[in-house]
Length: 199
Ligand SMILES: CC(C)(COP(=O)(O)OP(=O)(O)OC[C@H]1O[C@@H](n2cnc3c(N)ncnc32)[C@H](O)[C@@H]1OP(=O)(O)O)[C@@H](O)C(=O)NCCC(=O)NCCS
Image 1: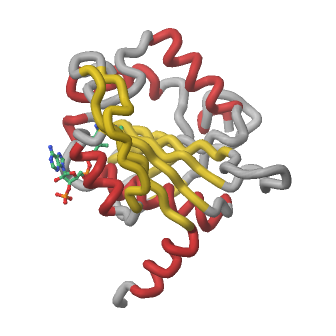
Image 2: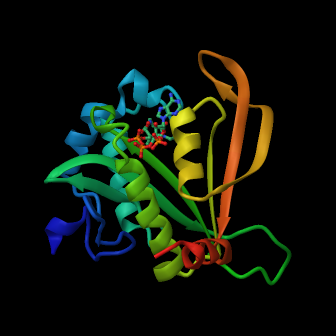
């Protein structure tokens, strides 16, 4: 069992399969592979956390593996890790009496060598289904820089709705203040979309 995650006992991350991909907990031996692409300029360009220090990065994944509300996965294609999808369950917004842990925050970082082939969309779609069907969250959110066109496209392909356009709300190290978007999707909207699809 130890091979399945960075630490035991196993918490958080699922084991899922899609048509082409395996989504499973991040293992310690994955970190070096992830670091092969994580700090490339085309990867860090639109991330809030840009270049990562390898030691801190490994420690952060080790902490994530122990956190029950962290369901992040490695995305594996034919035995090679090609990306990660993060899914953090959080409390939503509300007054006293707010039910706990009803929302999830989605994120994704993929190796550009495998970009543009629908893998990130396929993996994110599976994690949305996992969050709604298995974790029972009621709402999923995701944020991105407005100019991160691949991310915008991905979020809209998986059915998320742009709920906020923050004008000049986000700091970019090279560009200064730029626009940011927040996307969200309710479980009921997602279920309606599934039942209305042909076939
Ligand atoms: C965002 C990211 C995960 C997308 O990965 P990917 O493998 O290209 O994703 P997919 O192939 O599933 O889909 C990407 C979609 O964006 C489109 N796209 C990619 N680059 C684009 C661009 N510059 N302009 C417009 N559309 C673009 C693709 O054509 C595709 O849409 P399509 O299926 O309609 O053709 C990847 O680019 C990445 O990891 N970027 C660096 C990290 C990052 O920015 N993470 C998100 C932070 S919010």
